[in-house]
Image (tube, rainbow, N blue to C red):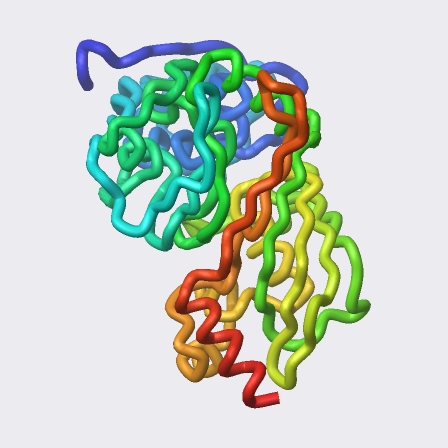
Length: 312
């Protein structure tokens, strides 16, 4: 084990009686469930002197010992232009981009593709230095394969105020999604907690005890095989729209990760989820007036929509 490893030990408190070892580790040491599982698998967790499996149960008073490896170093944004990323608006405090497909908001462990931050830095734009090193200026995110309007803070005051606005739900985030079938009712709300999928890495799911998550949807246009929805997010969880649409059995067209029909996706030429951040509105963080920005459908989404419309 590295000399930088963090060795900790303590008795299991009464409140964790009967808890799974991975859950107990997460709660006691502030780990993610995934990292707790990795530490257990590595044999770096002892319960009363013996190694454990992540599904083992702890008992009050038992002595829990864990050796934590040093956290991985934060990935760094590579400053390089991102083909297809347009600037919708820019001033001294904010820059609003039209994010293309295959671009993450910021670098993360395991992501080797282009990022919004890298694209801005690579074309001479400045971003706020607030926040974690790998996500400076980022106040909200879009999935790598979700396109559309996204705002990045350039000044420190803009970063602080936009973060507060997102937290307090004072941002109008509108998405359009082409989903399979026909949601019933045609206008509704999905209110279901979301957390990491209990078994499938990289996925999220509706999970009891997860983070409160609320999605409002309304039908724009119905077709024979699919429905175009306007979606208003009350919360902003990772994969929220994709998870909630799949939960009501109307996954986004092309979203094979969340159960979309591959035959329909192939027929429409959909190589990723049909989901687009079409509009973003908020009070300008320093000027005070309301601003709104719109992003047109990218070519492949527009083409798929025309095919499904022609078939109806």
